[in-house]
Length: 196
Image 1 (cartoon, rainbow, N blue to C red):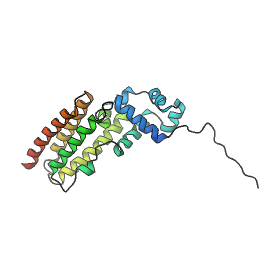
Image 2: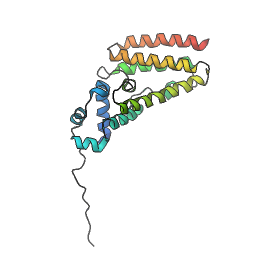
Image 3: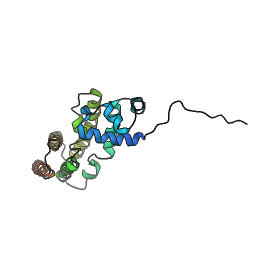
Image 4: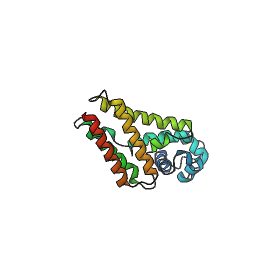
C-alpha cells in the first residue's frame, strides 16, 4: 500500500495571525488607523504583502479583527461595571473612571481605538468602529433605561460625549489625574440628574 503525500503550494505561514492582530492593535492604537499603512503592518509582522492579504484580506479587514480583539482585550468591561446591584449613577461613575484610566494607561497608545476609529477616512474601518461604538452605547442605554427610562437617551448621549472627550484629551496628552478629575466631575452631574 502506498501513501500519497499531499503538498501544499507555497511556503507555510511564518507568523501567527492572532499575534499579528495583537501587534496591529498596538500600531493602530498608537498612531490611528489612517496613519498606519499596509507596509507598516507587514514590516511589524515580518511578512510580505501577499501573506498579509492572504491572512487578513485588506487593511480594513485586519482592523475589523483588531476591533473584535479590543472588545475582548482592552475595552472597558461594561458587564462588570454596569451591574444591577448598584445605583445607575455609581455604575456610570465606575465606567467613566475606568475609561479615564484605560485611555491614559499606555503613554504610547492613548485614547480609545474604537472612538478614534469612528473618524477614520476609510469607510470600511469607520463602519467597523462605529458598529462597535453603537453596540457599546446600546449596553449603556439598556442599563440606564431599566431604571430611568425617561432619561435614558439624554444620559446615554451625555456619557458618550464625556467618553469621547476623555479619549480626545488622552490623545492630546492630558494626564490620568486630569482625566479622572473630569470623569468624577461628570459623575457628579450624572448623580444629580439621576436622583431628580
